[in-house]
Length: 307
Length: 254
Ligand SMILES: Nc1ncnc2c1ncn2[C@@H]1O[C@H](COP(=O)(O)OP(=O)(O)OP(=O)(O)O)[C@@H](O)[C@H]1O
Ligand SMILES: [Mg+2]
Image (cartoon, rainbow over all chains, first blue to last red):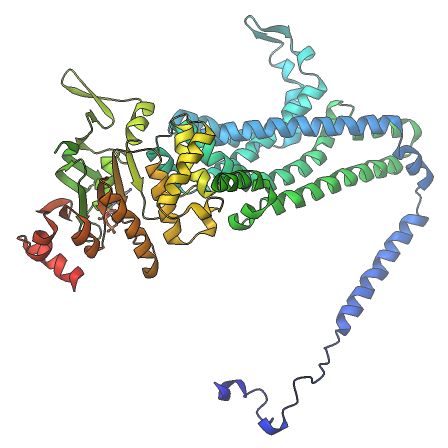
């Protein structure tokens, strides 16, 4: 033992050893300073380029809070929220179908993922927007009978396009989440007499939800950005509003920068939210269990014990 | 002595591999039956067939006046809808080798889940009864812990309380101590010993020969999907007639 550890300092004899309060000198890291300095320099150069470039910063500032842009950003948020909600609903529905015992349901869910994950979302948006070319009327006996162009407005097309596409990704996430809950818990639920539906709702889904919440944070961030694609189908969200302004005043880059600022603000807020979600629903079940999210139930349990 | 469980001609194959070959077994109320046998002899499969976690390929299991998974209708067995099968399954409490506790629920949550969801008990009532059961298995102090915070022995005691909460007619144990560290085996066996003393009907698959000798009313030895020996523990364990049973026992008792 002593022989192997003394190898590195083999010439230092025991009598020369310093006392316990011997001072320690840390390594200095010159490369950290050099690389850090280089990056700061580069940032300064890029910053200066933009500052002196042909951008009218006052115009950026002026339009940052323009009514049309704010309204556009409102639409952006609304489209993203609706599409994400639709995506989550479809993701759970088809994710559960993917694991069904019924081969036809399994196939239908597979087909959904295959089609909507396998084609570009921009293309899907355009198809939804032009769906009236295929089905001129939307007719459900006793419920709806209207012209398709009146039903599928740009807003509806955007929500359908983005939501259905997102659902195809979330289907796979939900499927993975459900199948990662170990089979033994399912069997235990069955031996207690819980039906497949009860087992899914009470045992499998709560654990799946915990696994996929961090993923949903990513989805929300992605959705906020992808909603800009709706500009191509004449939806008056933020990018579209910006485009309509710069077609008139020609301040193209200024208005695009305005959009960038708003998107960054939105994704930053969502990232912060995601950080807290991930802290709540961390990988380790034991750590997650200690978090206040569950404290309500735990406290009730303690109350019973004292009673 | 009235019968609790009667298995008739149980056969089960996985692909071409015939795991259970025409098994018959009767268990009376209040009886403790231990099933011994080498690894891979089909003990777990048999237990899972009894409560229909696996559907037998042949034969059937009668539990307390009804055939598991079927209704006898004009001389044929008509498969039951899943809801009625689950009601039958809840008559058999199952304790698994790997505990299978619900990871997202507390100890108390695990125990009240079945009574609340399946039997529709109100939370307060379910919790009061669950706390009695947890007291019984010595886990009341951990009621608000999560399974990941428990030792293996504690998990298994919670799993036993969870199964008991459904007030089953018969308790099935599938090697309840073989995933445990040696020093934790005793606490689980102690709980099971108390259950046996209290008159609970139990079918226990185990490698714990000492437990079988002490607690079992009857011991069954399974080899290659067949019951080769059955009888009182002292008789089977010390003087088995079947040569393969003798080989198996000499190996585990050595
Ligand atoms: N779901 C399954 N699919 C395929 N084969 C299986 C399945 N379950 C069990 N088997 C096979 O059936 C045989 C009996 O398995 P079983 O688990 O019942 O044995 P066991 O007596 O409980 O063994 P052990 O003491 O190791 O638990 C084994 O050969 C096993 O490989
Ligand atoms: Mg086994």
